[in-house]
Structures are given as C-alpha cells and as structure tokens.
Image (cartoon, rainbow, N blue to C red; front, side, top):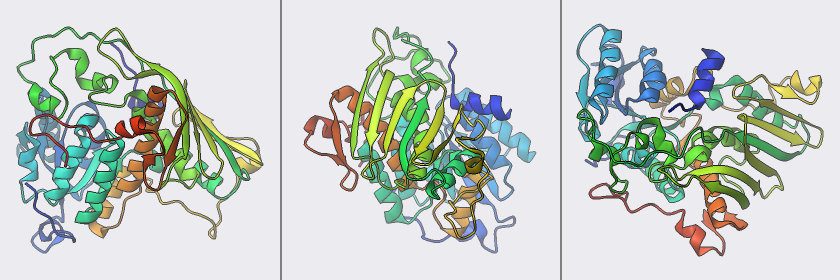
Length: 426
C-alpha cells in the first residue's frame, strides 16, 4: 500500500522523575567533556527517525548519539548500524524500553520520533528525568498540549517542537512579508492540505512479528489486535494513535498561518467544518474536510484538501505558494521583491534547521524557534478542525482559557485520554 508524506515532497523537491538542573550539566560542556558533546538518546527509529532526524544529528559535531530505542528490533538495529558506521565504532547502545534511556545520567537530550499517541507521555517523562527534549509534532489532544507546556516551563527545560518549516526560506519569507504589511491588512488565509492517501485499512488480525514488542508499541492506546495496517506510517489514519491528515500536515502550514497572523501564542475564536471519516475498515480519521476559522482580528482562515499550499490575502495584495516548498508567489513584483528593512519585524529562524537550532538552545538555555507553547497552539488548531467536523456545528473557542464556550461535548473531546495500564498521563 503506497502512501504520500510531506517528507516525500521534501525529498522530491530538495532530493524516573528527578528534576534536572536548570543550567547545562557539567558533563555536557564542562572541563571534563573532551569534545563538548551534547549526548543524545534516540527514541523511535522508524522511517522519519532514521531518514530525517538521525542524519541531522550525525551531521552536527557537537552532538553525540549514544543510544537508540525502538520497539522493533530491526529498526533499532538499523539505526545502531548507521550510528556506529558514522562514528567508526560499535559503541551505540540499544534498547526497546525508552525508560532505560531516561535513567541514564550521561544522556542530556532525547529525540522523540514515535507515533503521535506517545509524544506527550514520553516527553513528560523525559522532562521529569531532567532531559531537554526535541519531539516530533503534534500533541494528541488539546489538554495534553496544555500539560506539556506547563511541565516544560516548570522544569525550565529546552523543548523543540520538531518541524523544519520555520527554517524553510519560502515560509519564513511570506510570514515576514505579511507581518510587515506588504499586502496591507491581512483579511484571509487559504490553507490547502493533502487528502489522506489510502484507505480503508485491513483490520484482520495477523501474527505479531517476532521482532516487534507490540504491547509497548500500543502503550497508552487501547488494546487492539495486531495488523500491519495499524503500525508504521499507517498509524496516522487510526484515531487511537493520531489525528489524521489534518494533524499530520496542518501542524506545518497552520504554523506559517499563525506566524504570519501574529497569533502563534493564541488561536481562532470560531470554527466550523464539514467532512467525513473513513468507514468500513481499520482507518477512522477524517477523510474529506472543509473547515473555516475566524480570529479575533477578523481574519478568516479556510482549510480544504488538495495540493499542499498556503495563500495570504490582504487589502493591498496577496502572497503565498502552490505546492509544498514551492517558490514564492505574489500579486505584484513589488511585493515579491520587497526588502525587509533592519528596522522592521524580523522573525526568528535558523536556516540550518530545527536540530541545529535545538542544539544551540541547549547551550544558550533560550527557547528554540518552535517552542512548546507555539507547538501546542498549532496542534490545537488541528484538533479544533477535527472536533468541529465531528460536532457539525459552529464552535466558539476561548483561546485564553483554552476551552469551548457553551459546548460540553466539544470540551470532552479536548481532554487527555485515559491511557492503558501503567501508561497514563498525569
């Protein structure tokens, strides 16, 4: 079964609970650290973990990957081989239980590349174990994101929501143009995300591969029989593990939208949407969708399926692009070629990407370009779409209190899920 992913677009286009210290540990940058290395543990080494995150860490000389963890032995050992070959030794440790990484005093940071239903739980445990965290997007529910934000600030840790968008020149450029008034007063944002690639998924139980710790893969999710269509990239289309295509891709383009709209630490005040979910098989996330948001500044944002794109429309013109990472377009050459002056708004980025930015911030103890609270707010925009589609009514959202106004059913849908066995978020 073939599936499309944002990373495929990129490749095509471009080719336990101890509170840690509030400053950099002495073994990271102290006089006894020979190469001033930041020691990293990798949790989740699937296609994205080894295809995107691992090469980025191995390319940074001030990072040292010491251990790799995955519930599938083949993937775990594949990552170990990559790491050992890079360092020219056989020193990389392996484990199927991420808690062994968190218990190690010599691990400073963790890179979490697991399915969505594990993101917040592992992040919380890592923060409470004194680790700085880079974790893939998105959160699993709105209230998970609220708790994660609180814990990052409580423990004074560096947290990077892992996406590259703010380092991609075309998205950074259009956000700066909008923020500096080049299209006049912003009026409307048009976001286009992909359709879910395949369905409906085969729920027929199958033998669990001997290399896979399937119970650990499920973790906090409900008990369910193994089938190949439930795991690997397909987890995105099962609501027990993910918010579907809107949460997968929306975390990217909605971030550029919020960034340009200067609402990155807030959000919309109204949401309504229509759509449907996959039925008749394993997959049950949103399939078709048409969502409209309204912000307090009267900006309207729409979200529909198609070729991943974004467009900002203002009183004096528009700017955007058609296609993932596609060239910048504008309503005039004047807008397209406009220079952002030194006295204007300059949005924080790092052209070398989210991993380099995170490592720099581990040293400086400053927030990275996609910190926990902004990442949470973008995930919230995604969750709001799914909830609005399921409710089928216009919803009022209070972005300050982060609750739905006058809708108890919608508020139930934003809460932390109960978890399974020992795997509960608290």
